[in-house]
Amino acid sequence: MSLKPINKNNELTENHWLIVGSSGSGKTTAVKQLGIVGATDQVALFDPYQDYDDLCGREVRRYESLAKFARALFAGRAAKKAQGFKIAFSPVDGATPKNLEAFSKIVWGAGNGHHKKPLKVVMEELAKCVTTSGKATGAFGEILTGGRKFGLEAICIFQRGQEVPKTIVGNCANKWVGRQQRLNDAVYLSKELDFPEQAIKTLPRYHYLIKTNDHDIGEFDQGKLRKLKS
Image (cartoon, rainbow, N blue to C red; front, side, top):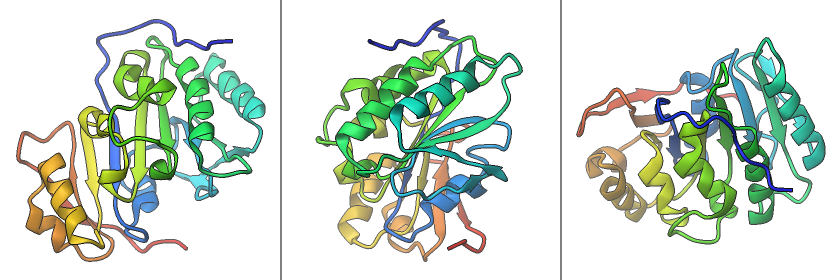
């Protein structure tokens, strides 16, 4: 069975996020602290290593079974009160291209351009789950290129920009960059994301650069995460 989103709505604003940084830079913490998701948001998570026990003060309901994850997600989306939820798919065999695509097919089918709330889609460990640095394909690619029209807001999390499809860079209006361990990674991100190269190279641990839909070309902000949880 092929799942498809409903109610295409071209008036919706693209609100995808790109979050990139070396291991320990604070990527997951940034999702939790910076208002990228809220307590009353509807959130689906691809969380292969179970990084999220809670999110914005709400318990994350976790499923190892794709079928159970799908039932919980569609039930939450169908509820008339459109209450917030945090539902994760954490497959037993971890971060693989097959598991990401299976998750993406379910999420793609949960899209609804006329829904009261967008569906925010947190995807961890993307570099381990993609097979190309070129064009993103399959349901994962559909979320990035067509998700806006159906109320899907992708939050793409990975360590190195060179390892993920350029579709992510091209379709994420919001960008967060944390500390890089390699100078070549900083140079690459500067070219692709239009952050100053020196600003990326000199980021201390837990500091970040950020630009959003509200920034004009060349504008960005800097910040530091609060004390990280283990």
